[in-house]
Amino acid sequence: MKTIKFPTAQTILMVIALLVAILTWFIPAGKYDSLKYNTTNDTFEISSTTETETIPATQESLAQLNIQIPLEKFTSGAIYKPINIPNTYTQLEAKPQGFSEFVQAPIKGIIEASDIIFLVLIIGGLIGIMDYTGAFDAGIASLAKTLDGREYILIIVVTTLVAIGGTTFGLSEETMAFYPILIPVFLAAKYDALVGLASIFIGSAVGCLFSITNPFATIIASDAAGISWTTGMMGRSIMLLLCLIVCIVYILKYAKKVKKDPTKSLIYDQKEEMNAAFGLKSGHQKELTVRLKLILLVFSLSFVVMIVGVSFLDWWFVEMTSTFLVAAVLIGIIAKIKEHQFVAAFAKGAGELLSVAFIIGIARGVTILMNDGLISDTVLYYASTATDGMNKGVFANLLMFIYSGLAFFIPSQSGMAVLTMPIMSPLADTVGVGREVVVNAYLYGIGLFYFINPTSMILAALSVVKIGYDKWLKFVWPLLLILTLLAMVSLTISVYL
View: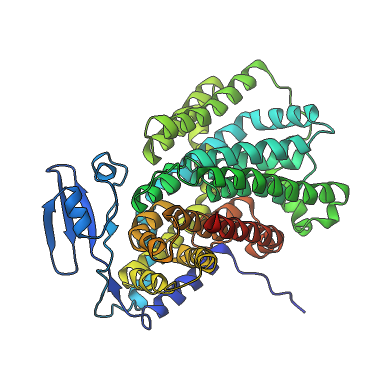
């Protein structure tokens, strides 16, 4: 009897895209009017379904639109995307997405997500060059020897550092670069690839979940809600520390079990495949020469430069991708790789991450289907009406779960903030709680669902590490349940303090 295999990430996303296309035939089409600040002539542009109107960029204009956001948030560039205008939802003629739109959606998604796709492919090329030099083998062997008996430090350090990146500047998509690099290190430490995946992905997820200074989540959401981003920061900081400890302990417990008995690994049946894909390539320990140390230094510095650029120099995908391309060329020069060998190694490395690029594109295609079918704003409209006249504690927790549901349709943190906060934050006034409660519900809702959201980054990460979505769900669901309960307790306490 043949065993039925869980479908691949690409198939899962295509099924989701098909279901979304079907939904556009049943969910009413609708849209909010949107407001955008025009930096060229210092005006607001109001876009409706029929026309675009220009009004003065003043606080009075915002007040007339029931938008409680300080004008300087727009003029300073803190809010640079169009925001939805409250009480302007209009039901429109249906735009059901048929077979043609369904087929075209992944292609459109690949084109729209080309910035992150090229980042992934260039990182793959860089990894290919690093593999060719043998620097990874030598470095990993040396690190494994150094950590002998203290491998647990690797889990604590990686998870903590990635969480710090997540909570400070939204380290998320950028972690795609870390999987091909760090998974071999975890395997050399006698853990399985799931431990490496968890340390990186959960570190990023818990950091973004309880964002403190993340400009793409906390700051932009607070701005759109009309409050200071420091409001509610103490509660988020306490939750970050508590939940980071919970996550590290959870990963350590699983890692200890796997190291003691490898058959306890959830991916034990893939042990040989993982070793072949990520294990040391050479049959003996390669000496870590001065040249290889210099190569590893350039490689490591490329990530430092990327983080500094994103954090302080307003860099984004073009600059990040260029950094890794320059690093690959420099490493090729240091290693004295011939031109044709360099191109072959770079292309081979990029090719190994091509499946990840397709996953990212298909996931973006799902969002395109929802937007073209005009159902995203409809889902938001009905979600915003679900909390009328509720108890404070019920309101806060229900709003968190509503945001988890919305995260499937709007996986982008910044996109979710600018589209929903002008609609959702006034609900806090009617219930009698601070608007920071809505900001926290948004962070916790979208952050918790991020752990398993198929339209976000988890399927791409799983594809890099070659782990099935079913194995990940089996691993992460107890942790997700614990974090959800802690978030609910935190929100409930915050509305009565």
